[in-house]
Image 1 (cartoon, rainbow, N blue to C red):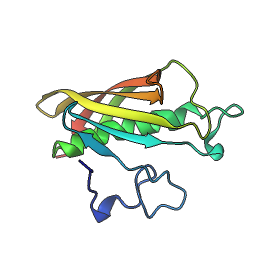
Image 2 (cartoon, helix red, strand yellow):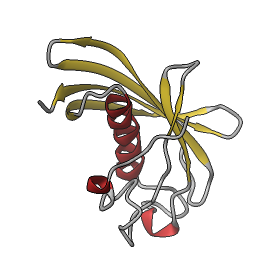
Image 3 (cartoon, helix red, strand yellow):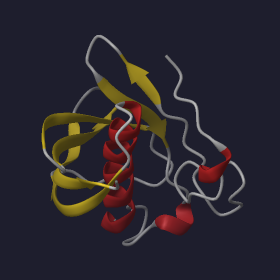
Length: 135
């Protein structure tokens, strides 16, 4: 199922269609896995070391897929804490898949996880996070 956005997200750096510098990533929801996912590529201006995507950009997309999991659950939330583990470099213009899901919810606290995989399914990076309900 395709994830629909309202006009309020159009300026988002990760998913906004109106942001000329943004990635314009399209997220979708997988009902069988109960997770959000997206395919993305990082352009060369996002590199840190030569031909390697800066870890901050990888972290940003891992964070965003978890935020989309919250929105899919009709629970707008913001990141309180995120811990990212990098396993392999993500290369400029390499196609990667990001996946994120809610692990648990209690009160205003939401625990989530996300992963960045190459097209062979090998994990490049992963994140665990705590989000707080926005309202």
